[in-house]
Image 1 (tube, each protein chain N blue to C red):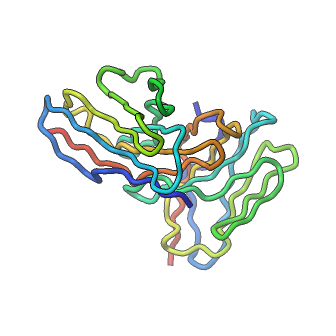
Image 2: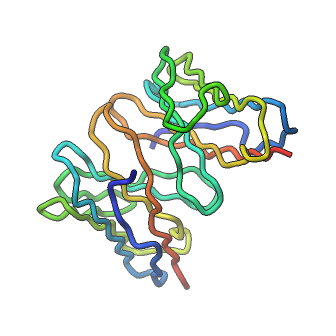
Image 3: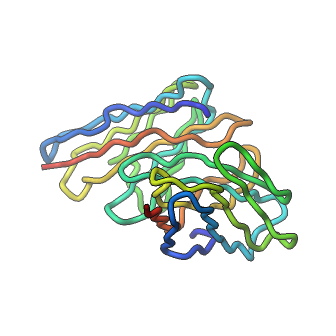
Length: 114
Length: 111
């Protein structure tokens, strides 16, 4: 299947700082990318959907000013968690697809805010 | 909200077939049934999808009932590495629709 690479795999940051997570589609052009968050022992929760060159569409309850999403090219989307706090600690997962393929997922990023 | 219901957990003996059921009684005519799995602390892995015909690939088989209100994912010879949470998702085809995850089924393959 298609490859989606997410970086970093894990990150620890201090409360109040910002963290950027990258999601790349390595062997296809991703017209749409998705960002999910997963708390321990829970399912994946969709945070936002982004189409290349457009503003992201955020799910209800997700603060767009806190979770900045940029999808500037067909192979790269970034999620920036601004002014991170301990309650933002979670497993963040991206997903990408083009018009014809299924959605493929990155390996996830474990964020710990201390 | 997820449009599917799955049992929270199942056990399977190594080497035997694992049959994972999924109910999707409100599925629409243009919605596909997708299956993904998530091994602990990893991103979900695509397994298979179908519209109304049964499907088979190198990983699994998907059996969809004639009325499309339920389906079964079959892992023909389960191994310990198949232990994971399996998610059944319905989504419109093409560029429409997002993957909305329910709680899935935790499959434990035991030696």
